[in-house]
Amino acid sequence: MQQLFIRLALVLALGTGIFTPTTAQVMPPVAAPADTTHKFENPGGTSAAVKKPWYKGKLVKATAVPALLITYGALHVNNHGFYTNSDAQYDIHQLFPTYRTRLDDYLIFAPYLELGAVALAGVESRNDRINVGLVVLKSELIMLASTFAVKSLVGEERPDGSDNLSFPSGHTAQAFLAASIVHTEFRDKSQWYGVGAYAIATSVAALRMINNAHWQSDVIAGAGFGILSAHLGYLTHRNRWGRKPKDISFSPSWQPTLTPTGTLSGAPVFTFAWRPKK
Image 1 (cartoon, rainbow, N blue to C red):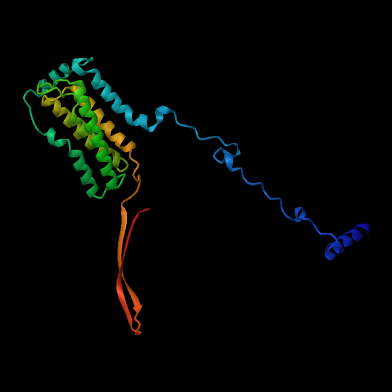
Image 2 (image 1 turned 45 degrees about the vertical axis):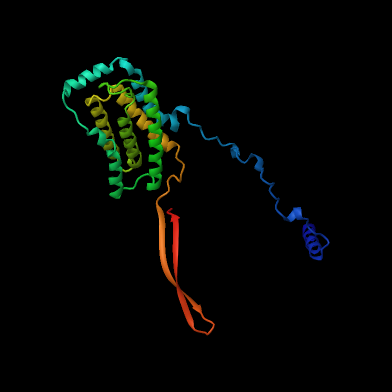
């Protein structure tokens, strides 16, 4: 009975306003504002993302194979190394004693023809045509600057004695640069595109030695310079990676207008839109 009287008294007190609950009694506690000064730290004690070791980085992957090729070529310049340039040249001319051709002058651009033919056939490349063109231009500039600078510094005489610009092979560098771009653009579709391009580039290297225009060290290092130039062209390219060709739309319409005399008139309106596809 005593508890019943207490409850009734509380109800009457609330109804008459004698007892009014405070804000803290009826409102839920407000959460403290978030500390934004440490917003980039790991919340809740979660572990941070593990950083890849340096030898698994993009730069190492891009330069490892070219560095091996260039190093091999540099160690065999001026007839040095365990398998000298003279040994390689002797073996080559045992197989092709009198064969000479200018086919290597034309094959250096064959991988680019493959690139264009595959694109025209409707195979989607990794990047759109504008970005592929920019990568090609940048890679070509890197290759030309590096190979001609090294040619002038090394001054190795060609096997035929025509000049002292033998090391490295510019023809081979050009062919392998183009082959690397073909491989990069279409490797997600099929590895055979790259295999075909590299087969053409290897043929160029072989023909340069058969034609007595380069030593083995020249063509091996030239392949390294070509691949390295292509990889550096991609690594330094940041112009809208992954974008697809622009979506261009053009639609005519009719805009009605009311003249001051009350007659209905109108004029043609043309809408032009240009935006990247998602």
